[in-house]
Image 1 (cartoon, rainbow, N blue to C red):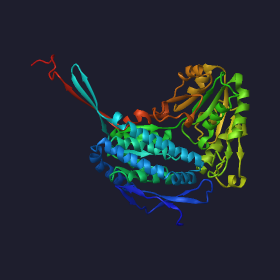
Image 2 (image 1 turned 180 degrees about the vertical axis):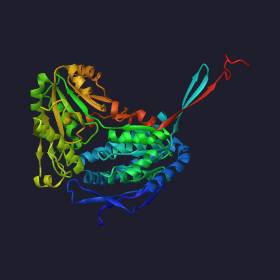
Image 3 (image 1 turned 90 degrees about the vertical axis):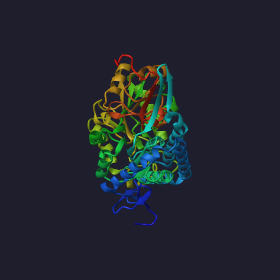
Image 4 (image 1 turned 90 degrees about the horizontal axis):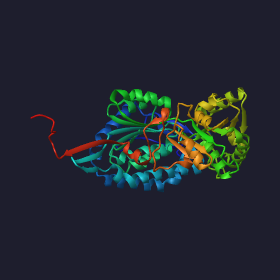
Length: 492
């Protein structure tokens, strides 16, 4: 392999472990170009990583919280110092524009710093004095955490797990997606170097690695971000040993545009366009279906297309004028195009949006020109399934009740958004079934790491971010010290 290509190794018990088998990661902008290679670890190597984490846990969980925070802050600084290198590598292997990669690193650092700033208060013992004595509520580390992360936001969706888990006194084995393994491995390596051997381990691989990470009896908790169907298999694998879980799963997030929404508000319309097409639509919490009050539907569509044509510029992720790069992989591009073709075959109108800056490059890579789909049926696959790509259907609703029914008619409930006069929007939002509902913004634009994030229904179990995101990696241990040790109603 050429010398300029990245070669990633597993990290087991502080040691970089070369693999006999390597999997190439292509550049989705130029698919014939290999960016680097990640290992295909064996199930036996995964067991070694779990064993190392298990052996490291007793000492690490007894390490004072101040020392854990100190080590994490050193890792944060190392990531900051390497931001340019990491962002470039992420854009190359993933396809997202450079500004988007830099933004993902920014969100990761913001969360890691929040976790460090709040760890002592949230994870420390809570002592309650009361009439019957004293109670200590301790937050104990759980044990070995298996973290399995996806390709769309590999850095932030890994650090969202690493920071709270390690600060709470757990150890971890992390497996990234083979579709974006390189930049996240660099970040994990920077963090792992600041912690004792075995505290943070890294493996790559296929389904057998995932099975071991979710079924091994030494694993106490699973932290997974990914598809709902995969999560069902994980839950079955974990059932025999009743593992704790945090599952952040798929979403088919609705955006409700109320009659009170000002279609001439260019900034709001731009926010909505970004909430549909940032990262080429490959975000779990992006707005994937738009419902508009029928009274303003035609005006809205006109202004939406106008705003989209201004913002969307498709091309090379390293071109500073580009807002949308290629789709991450061929399979995903084909899936999204299939949904579009299906809707069009049933009579829907497909409108292309924005500009393609380089036709030759567009034809070479896994590029898709963003589209809006008009006239689809409410039950068409492009409406009810999670597209995870640069297309969005826009459909009318008759009144607020109808809008709420449409939004809630889904197995998913990750995020949602309501757009219109604030008080009106809040009243509608109260009836939407979602883990988070944003008002007059959506997706990453409305994300705040200080508050819990997660889904309802089949969009997940548990919460990440906020204080809840720290507590999710602890066991609550209650220690009671009553004044009266003998209960009066028990006879001698």
